[in-house]
Length: 201
Image 1: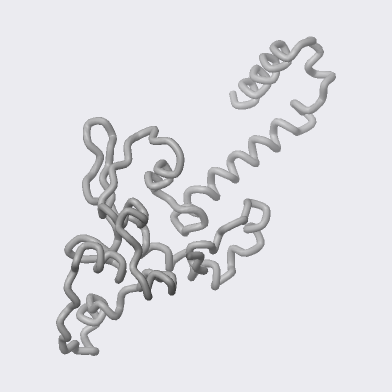
Image 2 (image 1 turned 180 degrees about the horizontal axis):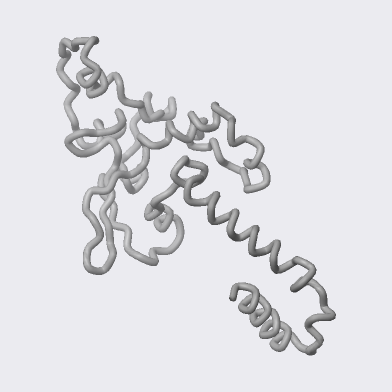
């Protein structure tokens, strides 16, 4: 099921997001994702493998998921009186957590456990260094367009663009073939590497 927060950055590239840094709606959708991220259950072992768990699991779940409750037979919470003036109590209440959207067809007729996503069948997952495909994305410390990502990305981008500007300046200008007279791809590559190295020095 495609939801707005999950698809907030779908199709965006660096050029398309430069002009929307002040887009409040996009920032809110990106922030709304955080509760749905898999959470760290066990830190990296000696081989670098980490264990992550479903955000609906554990002693203090971040989201409410009817699918999780059905699969793992979690009883419905008993009604409790909440002091609305107590921010901590209201924030900890089930009603304050985001709800995982479930397709209408599944709400009417629950799917067999074997047809559910892997994280729904077993609420923890082990991610090892170098795991191929989609598992590797779970090792990300910074998610795309998140404020922490921008804090790390912007200085690096400024440094890279500054270096590119120097390399293309009149003094060096690596784009000028007249400064790389040797023939052949290997020779051109070596000369280009030496020009970049000398520029950095």
